[in-house]
Length: 344
Image (cartoon, rainbow, N blue to C red; front, side, top):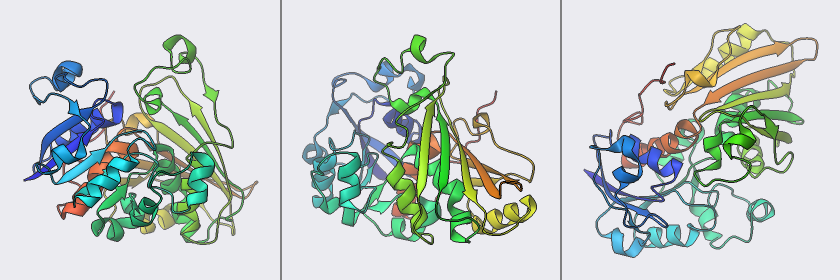
């Protein structure tokens, strides 16, 4: 039995990770750490887990916890956990990081979108934790960097088209709508109910921090890409719908595009390509680790339109983390992740 620690357990990503791990037959949660919630019983803090777990939130202390666990999850903000990740690696632990600190390979990109990196050596050690593109590398790593939620949906939507040269690498467009839980548990004016309910708003246009992840990963599949990303906040709890556009390099039918995508994702348990003429909705993946993708062709404009739907807290974060952990531990990749969406 593998014992794990979850640091940042009382955030939305952390508690969703705990929920998934409770159903994992090969894993035992040995420690949950927090900051402002130290001393609280996790099930009291999140009553939906009553009867499932009886652990008190402790301090985030890597050295004190290391002897009793094998894997450490860090569900902490960028820069906050970098030193802790480095400490855990030095102690010989397998690490899965939720922050942006280890996702980008180019230090200048990180510092342009975030701040000076406290441990730049982590960028060389980490593997981008998107199994559909980096499965073999994840299997052999000790540090997996969970992708951002927006990049997960966008990259999976565009990867086959980029890899097969179906679309031009320049001028890609990603238009995404996200539920409010993507902003985390801390309240801000933007996420206040009366501010975001009955409203849709674009934000951080042409400057969102997830843009370089999309560019990095899609460029690795072929020619370097240029990409415009516009995120929107939608008044719903969960889910991201990404509508992605690329200029076609040749004439292609929807049926041909669907066949290309299905071939690219052959054997991928968590990517579902819709039949021609059908597009996904976030409701179809709520609470699941699936990414649903639908395709359309705008023949007049010569564009491919790829629409993806994910649950931002599962496939977009905690589910992806467990998928990475399973690969790192050598257990079946789908373990604890086969739950289908909650409906309605």
